[in-house]
Image (tube, rainbow, N blue to C red; front, side, top):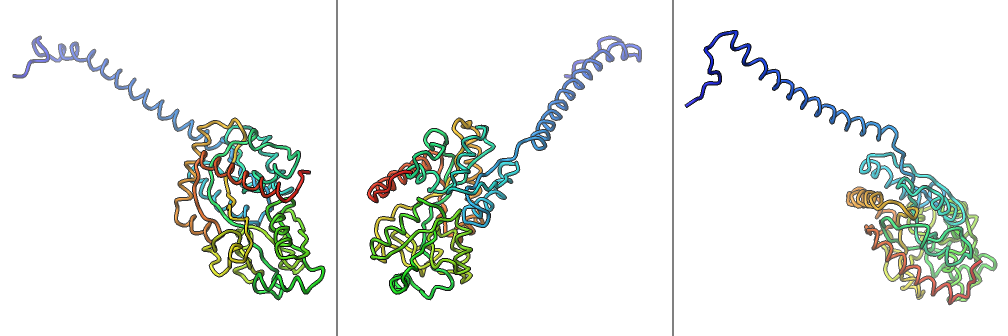
Length: 350
């Protein structure tokens, strides 16, 4: 049974008198509710718009010149990270001193999540072992963010060198007095220690010639200004495939998928280089945990994209996402391994 809404006799006057206040109150509540919702929506849109327009871009510091392996990796990731983070991601090259200049720039940057450093092992693990005063301490000035890959270094000969294999190179150097100059991307680096180890192991008079990164070193190799060089596989891979130089040995126990025909150092009788270097992102100490997690999550998604993995693998990387703690452990283990190698070599920090 339906109960009547109005108990008074029906008339237009009664209808107006009885219903008008009810309709007005309802209308007022409806308008108030809609207004609040609209204001909330407008506020959210305004904040999002302001963030997009005034938010700082994320800087990815790279310690080597454009065109080198680290630079190419950074630019490959920057384009994809931009989509995941919803912000501009800018690669900023700060070449010089084996990444030392970029590391010092990271130390001076605000710890607000807008500046990160893409580095491999040399700047983070090796330089603090071979320099008395590098201008930064990774343990206190930086915080690991996330790792993306491991890789290996390689030995290559210039396009004009007659050697087609590592053993042929050894024979060529023995027959060519004064030709044992080997380019390296930075002084006091793992490539320099490799040159010294090759010289002592195979009784050769080799001299390391340091450059400001892999790109200028390769330019001299392709111009036949130096007969050989040591750098990472990502530095060499494209010019090796193009026939402009030849990688004749990769470091470690195993051959690399990107260079299946090139023997490893273990195969060639050169031990002690089995611990593989890494690539990772680092931020200034004190960077908020939320910023680190946000970037780490974005990197994990980017590395999960098949086209990104394919491109990085083709560069000679073993793609392996490492969250913050895993990268910290990887860095520590690598640093400890090389501390022993450097100490046994008799090298004194300068």
